[in-house]
Length: 65
Image (cartoon, rainbow, N blue to C red):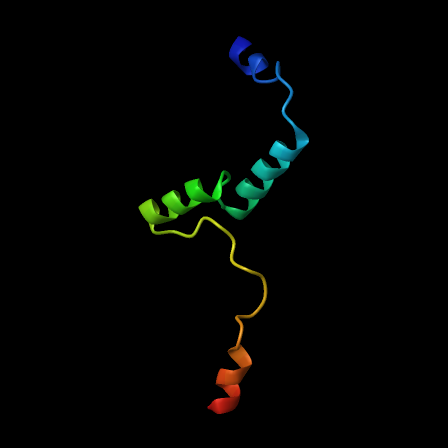
């Protein structure tokens, strides 16, 4: 029980808590971009979110077909 209480002995900044929440909810890694790149390379999985929206030029391909 002492170890559990020790977790709350230190203040954790709200910004860090938000990063942890987003990482857990989205399944994405938290940390610096270099760390994320290393994790992606080691695991072969994406750990950074893609840009939102459709890819650039997606309409050109549809029109030409």
